[in-house]
Image 1: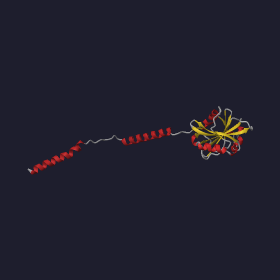
Image 2 (image 1 turned 90 degrees about the vertical axis):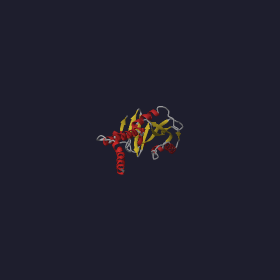
Image 3 (image 1 turned 60 degrees about the vertical axis):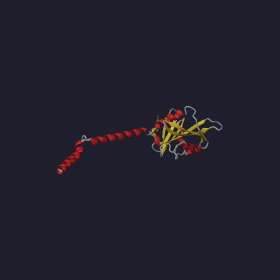
Image 4 (image 1 turned 30 degrees about the horizontal axis):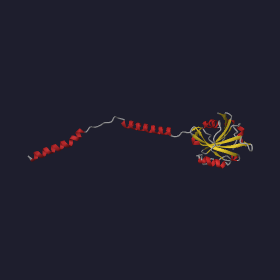
Length: 212
């Protein structure tokens, strides 16, 4: 009788252990599910990178600078900083965010300075300083030469070297070149010959002269 009781207890215990096993279901994933999962993850990563790239500030075309200069001087501009000392203008522009290593060309430093401003070019800053090329003593009217500096990272299609590039637009003349990360532009509402004396190495090739 004891043996029969033990056998019944063992059978019950065996049934209790086997019940959960029988209740389990085996889930089979379709073939290639790992590849599909990897592709989906890659697509999500690419979408995130593309969205980040679109949100990041993008450089604007350097070709937008000359028309903006012409527009800016189409009306009497406001120059918040005025000084007869070019060093004061440079210090003020650097305080406004201009490249720390930009320098006012020596030939411009020899001129009387007028003032400076930060000009917006399609959302990118160009740092402006104005100088008198010719000025009659006691008279405020005269011919101005404008220096603009900007960062290469803010503008695409900019000059790639310190070889000057000459351009003309709507009666204005422009000379531009790059030194390191700084783009330099000279501008004057005058013929190109007005700017040539202020350029380190005057262009010898006619290919550097173009019109927008």
